[in-house]
Figure 1 (cartoon, rainbow, N blue to C red):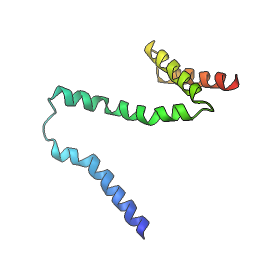
Figure 2: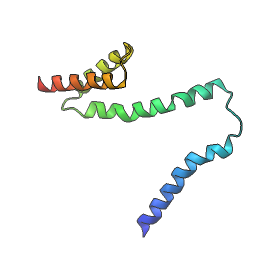
Figure 3: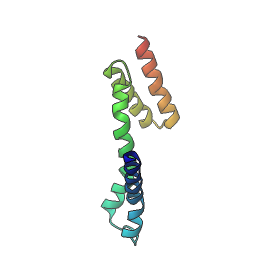
Figure 4: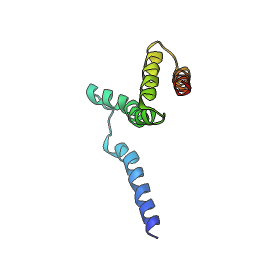
Length: 98
């Protein structure tokens, strides 16, 4: 029974986090700093979740670091998401085999 209570609390908390801003913020946000902050929050969240996996997902952390750097270079030169992921995966594969 306690698991059900924990799950209900989690559902309520998740729901409030998503719905409460609709009731608090009535007008469009005009502040440039807050707008830019909210624009980058999803990217920062993905980076924070992904970076540890990149470093720990290989047999050696330096392989993950090399793959990460190659991914940054690929993205810098305009590769899309899939080609960049492919470059990173190939770098890991090659370095794991060597």
